[in-house]
Length: 383
Length: 170
Image (tube, rainbow over all chains, first blue to last red; front, side, top):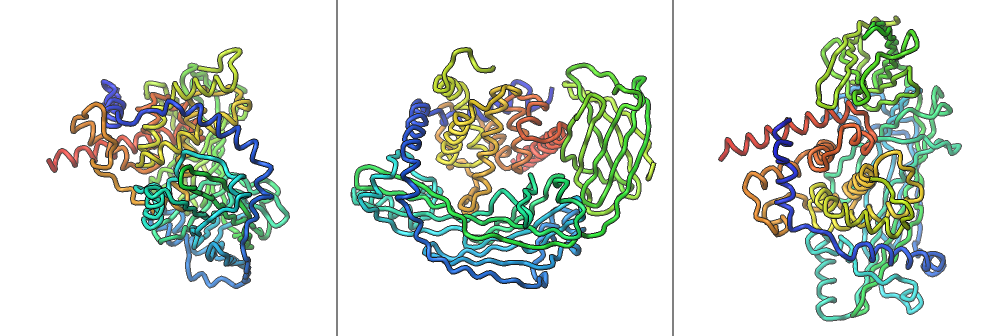
């Protein structure tokens, strides 16, 4: 038992320090009430609230001079981004700027890496939040939902100071007051130009610049139809959500809506990078297993299969794990593990940004107690 | 625990709220450093759970399922544009007034958990605070068990080092 679990130390510390935080006895009722109200109002909403944006969309196709290479920026803290940064210049870029009553939003894909199997996209978005005074018509007010919840951006501890002061003053004086908050964001879905969804990703973000966001999206295994193309055209929509908040002097009301603004697009040429296959065999607890590793700079995929039909027998509460290190001793970070059938274990690891020249592998059998049995497997390049 | 036979979705929501609300609130507070935001995140978690109740097939425990929703809700808030402009530094004055007076060790440990990176913090909270197994945490976070073990060890090391630094600086 470790020191943080001993005598329930960590749980005890948090429970005592945060003992002032306790639940809301009316939470269930509030949720059920709000959900019923939303169902009733849902159909009225889009007709009642026309999103009055004056759109000036300027789309520019430019050859990227890579003035800003996000992979270099993020590479300061993550080695593999730095390693592939020189290969992330995209062929064409469509930077989009949208001006509206809600301010100017600019967003673009600045860099991308595509090697036929792996895809990483760097993008930036600027001017993502703005506010506007709001005074509803009777018809609009009738379509808003009563609420007791004050949005966090009006909370005096967390919100914008001038806004929270205005809200607090209106509340104290009992005078009507309203605001619309616009927030632009990048869609979770990235697609090819023909609409193929490129699937799930992990994102690394940089948020130090005010009112802007830079990020690198590292996609999981691409769908087969998006693999091994000469180039990949990418589209990610930018949308804007609006939250209306109104105080009539006595009660508070809210509603929200979301609209698409514009797409960010880019075409990225396939990098012809090296890949290598490593293979090894080992007999563990009487079972012969084969380890095959497909390695690139970006990702390693390791498959452990039972050469004679069954994987080594382990107790029900134990599990397999795999450690991989390269010739420098760099330990690859695990990404995912699946067991597609009873004879196969599939592990993926983040690459280091460099092609490994040799690999050291250890299959682990881990017990709930943390006790681990290790079986080194000798692997050779190309089997 | 799984769904109780003949329990309506509303009854089930009530039971889940009663059972997990306080735990979730404290977990979300540790993630978000703010009481109002943590309350929002907890409410959002239960709204999502309520909406998805019929689709929950029971292939993990209710607790794992709820924690997964809560973790994702906190992540969404942490990544949202407005959150990035908040001052998220935490000092003793920012902590909610406790009902039970914590000792200095408890406060220090709480602060150091809050200062961990998001990924390490999630794993540490689920393992030590929610007493989940590494397998349940892997299911909750959608990562491999080995990733959980790695982050757990990293988090432990960082906590040890941070507490040690505090001790050595008096």
